[in-house]
Length: 88
Image (cartoon, rainbow, N blue to C red; front, side):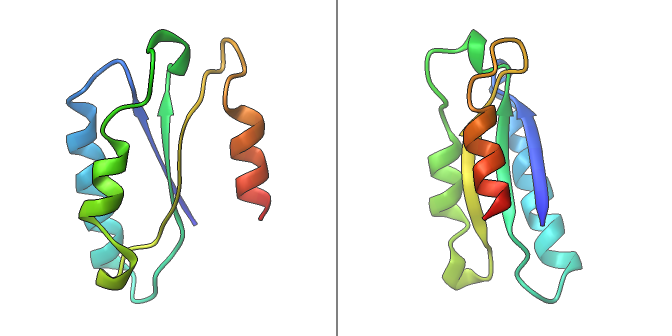
């Protein structure tokens, strides 16, 4: 299981997410679950750009992006949803 966290208020942080997705795929022989977690969700209207990564790195190509969500430690937004997804 890998959790890739990135700052939703910095659009170029998605480039780093792509780097980590590729690195995980390169370093592992199996298909570990990958969770993409955008932080600072309280500061943005909606989570943008994550869906394009799921399309770009599909399961049939050896990637296993299980969950994409935005969270905020300040307001608690998305934390419960993330916890539930991690438990499953």
